Image 1 (cartoon, helix red, strand yellow):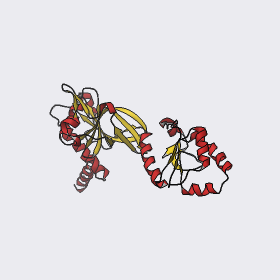
Image 2 (cartoon, rainbow, N blue to C red; image 1 turned 135 degrees about the horizontal axis):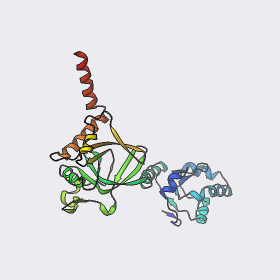
Image 3 (cartoon, rainbow, N blue to C red; image 1 turned 30 degrees about the vertical axis):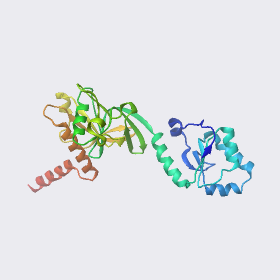
Image 4 (cartoon, one colour; image 1 turned 90 degrees about the vertical axis):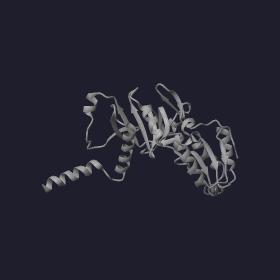
Length: 289
C-alpha cells in the first residue's frame, strides 16, 4: 500500500553521475535515491521533535525518488507532510528492510545500468555467452543458425544491447522488437522459438567471449597469429572481453571451431592453457636434447 503522486522517475544518467546511493536506510548525511524507513529509523523518530524531523527531511527531499516504510511500521507524520509538499511517493510494506533493499537493488542495478548497442549475434554456446561479430555478409547469421541446430540458444541477432550490470560483467539482451528472430540471407526472418522450441532462445546472457569472423582475404589471414601467445581482448564499457578471430574459408566448419574456442576459453578460466602447455613441453624436449 502507499500514497503520493507518481511524478518522480529515476533517470539512469542522473543516477549514475550522482554521488547519492541508489537505495538504503534513511540517511540524512549521505542520502539515497530511495529511502527505506525501518524499525531503527522509527525508534529515532519517536525521540525527535516533529519540526526537527521535517527540517531534516527537507534537506534530502529534492533527490528522493520515494520513501518505503518497511517492517510494518506506521508512516511518521513528518514523512507524510514532506511527501505531500514535494510529490514524493510513499510505499508501505510488511517485509523486512534488508529484503526490500536486496530485491530493489538487484532490479534497479539492471534497469539503470549503462548500456551500448553492438552489431552482431549473441548466443549461449555451451553455457558461455558468445557474441559473433564481423562485416556484413560474412556469415554471422548462418553460423548462428548452425550453432542453434547443435543446441545453442539465441539471445539477440543484429542488434545486441550490452548492459554494464557489474564492474566486470556485461549482460546482453535483445531489443523487444527483435526478440526470437534471426535473419538469414535467402530465408528472411526466422522465429527461432517457433522453429526450434523454447530451449533455443534465452532472455539474457552475460557476455564472456567475442568471436570475430574475418573475410577470406589473404592479407587478413596472413596477419592472424597461428599460435597466439597472448589472449586478445576487446574493451566494451571499460570491460575487457576475451576475443578470438576466425578466418572464414571454404571447407572450415565454423560451428565446430566456435564450440572448440568456447571449450578452450573455459579451460583457460580454470588455468589450463594449451599453447603454454605445448611451449613448456617443447622447451623441456629441447633441454633434454
